[in-house]
Image 1 (cartoon, rainbow, N blue to C red):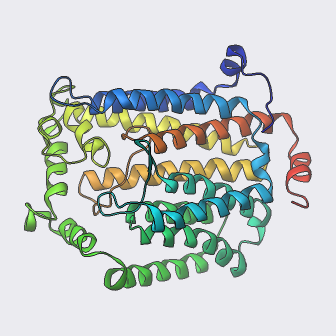
Image 2 (cartoon, rainbow, N blue to C red):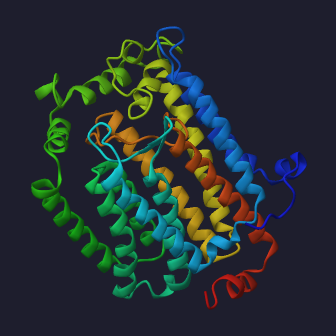
Length: 381
C-alpha cells in the first residue's frame, strides 16, 4: 500500500474529515454509555472502548494511506475470491454460535467474515458500475452484478444469517437504483424477490426464523416464546417516553429482560434510557454522517469513488433501518446491529475503516482530474 505522507500526528490530523468521523465517534460514545451497566453487573463497555480505539486507529490509517489501488480490477477480484473462501471455510470449520456458523474465534477474539464481505461487495460493485453504469439498461449487467452479490447472499443464508443476507442484498439493490436501473427491470427484480421470499419461507428458513416472522405479525400471541424479544423491545422503547429513565436506569437492559441489549437491541435499550428526545438526537447524528457521505459522493473525482461512497452510505442506511425497525416492532427479528453503536469488534473496525477509505479516496480524488483518474485506474484494468 502506498502512503501519501508519513504517519505523523500532523499528517493524521490533516487527513481526518471531522465532519464525517465526529458523528460516528459521538454515536460510539452513546453506545458505550448504553451498554455500560454502572455497577449493575458485568459491563461490555470496557472491552468496547478498546475496540473503539482500534477502530479509530484503523480510520486514521486508511485516511492517511493511498488506497487508490482498490480501484483496480485484479485487486477487487482477489479480495472477492478471498472473502468467498472465508465464507466457505465458515461452513466447514466454524463452531456454531447461537445456532449460526458466522464467526471465527481465535484466542478469544471473534471475527465475522461477513463484515469484510460487505466492504468487498461495495468495492466490487463500485468497480463494475463505474465502467458500465451507462449500459445498466442491458440485462447482462443487472444479472452479472446480481450474481456477484447473490453468491455472498447464498453463503450467508446457509450459515444461517438472514439479517446479514438482507444487508448484502440491500447494498446491491441500492447501488442498482443509484446507477439508473430501468423501471421495467426494477419491477422484474421485485417479482423475483417476492418469489425468493416464498421459496425461503417453505424451503430455506429454519423453524425458529419462521416463528420470528409469525411473532412479528402478532407478538402478543406467544410472549414467552418466539415473541418474547420483540415484546420486550417494544416495552423498552415505549417506557422511555419523552426524556427517558436516565443513563444506567433502564430496567429492561440492566435486569436482562431485554436479551442482547448490547447488540441486536441496543436501540431499544438506548430509547428506554434517553427517551424520544434521545432518539431524535441519535437520528440527527446519523443524518449528519449520511449527508456528509452524500456530499463526498457528489464531489467524487471518479465514478468508482462516487459509487463506493454511496455504497457505504447504503450499507449504513440498511443497518439503521433494519435495526430500528426490528426494535420498534415494524420488522421481524433478524439479529442485526446498528452502525457504530452496537457491541462488537469486527463490525466497528469495518465501519470506521470504510469511513477511512472514503476519506482517502476523496482526498486523492480532489488532486487528480476525473479523466486522468479514469485512464490510470479503469483503462485496461
